[in-house]
Amino acid sequence: MMETKIHIDKDIKAFMDECLQRDNPKSYLIAVLHKVQKKFGYLSPEHMDQVAQYMQIPTSTISGVATFYHFFRLQPRGKYAISVCMGTACFVKGADKVLESFKTELGIDIGETTQDGLFSLENSRCLGVCALAPVVTVNDKVYSNVNEKQVPDLINRVRSEEE
Image (cartoon, rainbow, N blue to C red):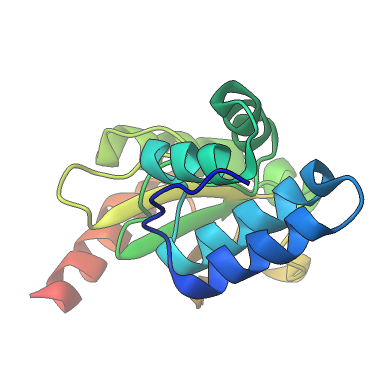
């Protein structure tokens, strides 16, 4: 194997070395990307380049995998990750309007982070608390029966806790 400079930590490097010794090492790419994301919080272009170089896989392949699967983040998550449940019960009770209100108020789309790094916006398939629909989480805190008119107050409440 060609010696390369890799800037990701020794545990990830050791895991990639282990994968490269196995049959069909490229089949471990998703596991490697998970480890990188767990360590750094997201997959930057530099992370993907380093994995590509070390595992001898084209960067375009790595990028294709990272963009195909929704569980990979391609930019840092904000300090406060806002997730709007879009499960059936939440959707029927107006979660789509709640999500649109967050997009408008924060000026970002799903998967994006505000410029100040404070908020990220995500959606989830089901949070399992359907009786409380529509549901929004901010990090691990659950907000129930949320409507689109409550969104500005919710954002301001989080901002005031920040100060």
